[in-house]
Every structure is written in C-alpha cells, then in structure tokens.
Amino acid sequence: MVGTPGHAVAEDFVARRLAEIGCQPYRGDSFALPYRRHDTDFTNFVGVVPGTDRTLPPLLIGAHYDSVIAAPCADDNGAAVAICLALGKRAADLGGFKRDLVVAIFDAEEPPYFQSDAMGSNRFHEDQLDDRGVHLAIIYDLVGHDIRIPGVRMAVPGLAGLTFVTGCESHPELPDLVGSVELPDKFKLVATLNRYVGDMSDHGAFRKSGTPYLFFSCGRWEHYHEPTDTPDRLNYRKMARLTELSAGVLERADNAGLDESSEAADPASFEARTFRRSLGVAYPLFCKWAGVSEIDDRDSLDRVAGKLLGLGL
Ligand SMILES: [Zn+2]
Image (cartoon, rainbow, N blue to C red):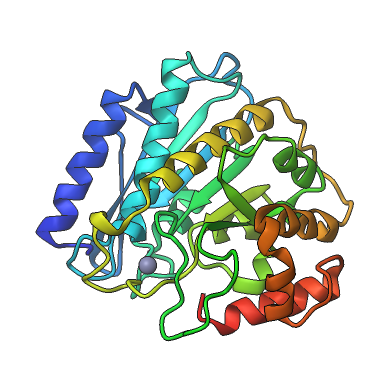
C-alpha cells in the first residue's frame, strides 16, 4: 500500500529490475518519476527499451505495483508487473523494436486513489508522457489466475482458462492485428468491449485520450483484494502464455500504421470468433449456460457479457 514499508520494497525491486533487464530511464536520469498529490508522495517507475527510430510514437506496456491491502496481492498486481518486466527483458535481449518500448510501472491504482488525480497512470498521461505520445498502450491487471467463480456451484463450461482483452474497439486495425497473432498453445483469449466492464485499471487515461490500447485481465476471483491473493495461487503457465502472445502483439504493432481514423470500429465478429475459438468443445454448453443459441452478433455478445458480469467477474 502507498506509504508502507512494503510499498518501498516493491519500489526498490521495480527500479532494480528495470535496470537489470536493460532499460534506460524514460525521462531524466532515473526510472523513478515522483509526483505529489494531496500531501502524499507517489512514484511511477518508467523505463524504455530504445528502438531504432526514437522519433516514432513508442509502444507502452504498463501495470500498477501498489496493492490495496498490506498483503502480497500477487494477482493484483504482482503478476502483471512481472509480465511487463519479462516483456521488457525480452525486447532488450532482442535488441529492441523499431519503436521505443516504454515499460511503465504505475503507482496508486488502488482505492482510495482509483480514478482520482493521484492515480499513477493519470499523472503519467497528464504530466510525464513526452510529446511523441503512445502508439499502442497495453495494460495488465488481474492476469495471473484461473477463472473461478466464488459461490457459484455450477461450473461454467470452458471458463477457467480464459483471459479477456478489451480495447480492440479503440482502433479499426486492432481486431485484425490481435487476430493475426498466433495463440500460444493452450492459451484462450476472448475479446470484449471495454464498456462492458468500464475502466477497471490503468488503461482509462489512454482510452479517454483516444490512444489505441488493449487491456488484458482475467477479472475478479475469490481472492480478489484478500490476504489470500498469494503467489502460490498463480497460474504461471497462463502468465507465460500471455507474455508470449503480448510479444507477438507488440511485434505487429511496431510495424502497424494505427493512423488516426474516424472509422467507427465495432469488432463484434472478431469478438464472436474469439469466443468460439477459445471455448472449443465447451462452446455449445457455454451458449446454453449463457442462454444464446449462437455467439455471432452484438446482441448475443451483449447477453453473454451480462451473464458473465452477473457472476461477479
Ligand atoms: Zn486491485
């Protein structure tokens, strides 16, 4: 939690790892980008893996490192921080992309700072982001667990292994871009609209400014914001697969135009395809559970989303 000894430990770890994986400071000579709000000190940590053309708008991967209670909070949000650092290391090891890759580890995502002017991603976007802006922002939160629904006795067919992505609607090129990345073996990705869940995390600042973004999450689970959210409960294979997929998305986004577009994007057919592909043999049972005959248009997607949200995801 902000201001606690544990927070200071997390800060030291993040700063050390950004250096070890081969990042350079995004601004000035330090990864630490401090700011002050309401008499409280906060710090974002932002590194960059330099690209071959540093004039281009950079790619950004981001996650928050603060926690909601003084506990490990492994899924919220240690797992996501680890994935960002792993992606940064991988990019650095490969000599970087064409564009800079910004590794942004944000402070103060959790209440009481959530969606306030003290929220780290809001301060980054307003005060710390340089004039190049961001080409594509990929944000992670709650990405380390299998989906299990507390208090729901009937298992939902095919649900456990899924990972959700929102934001494909933020640019008309994104559905094809994400869809063209080969899914890692056993990785199940489902695309949904951000408006179904709202700005649950640090992608809000990017969405509001019209920046193309993707937000990955497995939603809430029984250990959400509990002391039982511990590292032994994470699914490390699932995290590794998401890292793999993300590397593919970054590679394609590096070379994609993502030019300003007035074209309205409703990726309904792409979303429907991700459900069908990821659910596999569980698809008919899942449809039955959701009360739809097929998932094939916005109407059926709306109903499925309502059903899933009804579970408390
Ligand atoms: Zn949280």
